[in-house]
Image (cartoon, rainbow, N blue to C red; front, side):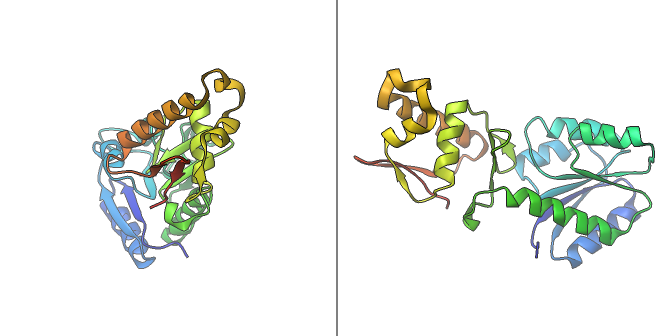
Length: 227
């Protein structure tokens, strides 16, 4: 059962926000209410939630604008709330990055259920190690999210990091990692791997300064530590 997740509720109607907050709390989550859209994007950058319940019509900034801004850097599941019934509006919300939508009036229990489904789907695409729940590997899109932010990885960097993440704790030699990136770096040998690892570490540190997940193993290679 999905529990103990931080849920952002972005809703200007105080009554609706309070009801949703009560239901998420009863389901074992930790809801945080935003009465408008002004601080949502910055809050997601600093403390990424497990899901966002996002009203379409908001003061200061509308839900679709917020959704587009979030999708520039975050893969967090977004469930949009809308009073509009027009199919075009719903499709536009999905095209702007929402994962699902619920039309008002709605059942708060349904919102919680749908949010849990999105979280389960999101976390189910993470590496099999349960300790690595903050990491998301999107193999179809060849990208990796770290604490809710997409890392800006090259194709070679993605291949290296995704391979290591899926085998946390295992030491990979430079030759093994070279095999994962194919012909792109054959001419530069082992130094290419060292350079890629350096770049990967730097890109991870941008979104997670305290991380030290890639260990150098003297004389052997590199290891990804999920913790």
